[in-house]
Image (cartoon, rainbow, N blue to C red; front, side, top):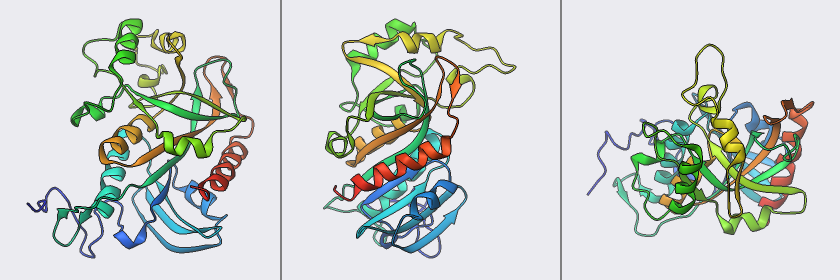
Amino acid sequence: MSIKDSELILNPDGSVYHLNLRPEHISDTIIFVGDQDRVEKITTHFESIEFTTQKREFKTQTGYYKDRRITVISTGIGPDNIDIVLNELDALVNIDLETRKPKQNLTSLNIIRIGTSGSLQADIPVDSFLISTHGLDVNGMLHFYQIDGINNPEIEDKFIEHTGWDKNKARPIIINNSAYLQKYFESDIVLKGMTGTAGGFYGPQGRVLRLPLQDANLNSKLDNFSYKDFRITNFEMETSVIYGLSKLLGHEALSLNAIIANRANGTFSQNPKQTVEHLIMYALERIVNI
């Protein structure tokens, strides 16, 4: 059965609705960044750029780095934007946009997030790099999909017990990264840990301006969670949804974090732009070997 026009919206030129992309515009290796200005901070290192477009916060450039064709896309901030970006990218490679039917032979994309994050642990210093081995989803977006089989109920139950998780909040979900991609990016200079993904920047990450929090001690509970080899190292707003949707759709995904703040000791990087630039170069040199 064909997918209805209202469910898969295409622009008059045949591109997907939000990203403004057609299948030929993207590579099978895609870098996600949050900030649209960071797209060109990556592609400035490319030998050539063959395609550029932007619609709203979604900026895309595709080009070549050392003969490897790579697409860089800005997702904007938050789980809701990841829902748009990943579903539309999957549609580009796994749905025939003419017949509006899923293809029989599916394509798996390699998706690497290069983002900034704040550490929750005193021993994860600012200006370090961290691979997210797991995404801890505490924002609820993934519950709109059938997630059985991609999550880790045993660890989730221990986290719920440890935090006294409020029953009115969505159940936390823990999703593994792509072991296939991780082997290309791990090294002695890169830390590893479980990354919490919040649905907002202020209250959901324990920041207080004028509004009181439902659980003022949640951040300290996150800091102190430990089960077997698992602890929560950092907090941001995209990783768990990238991991969850990639697992469900059959794509490989890895989140690389530039740690620019340490919430445990209240410090912030003196040169966050330089830290991000170093992570960009670290990632590019390894992407060419995938």
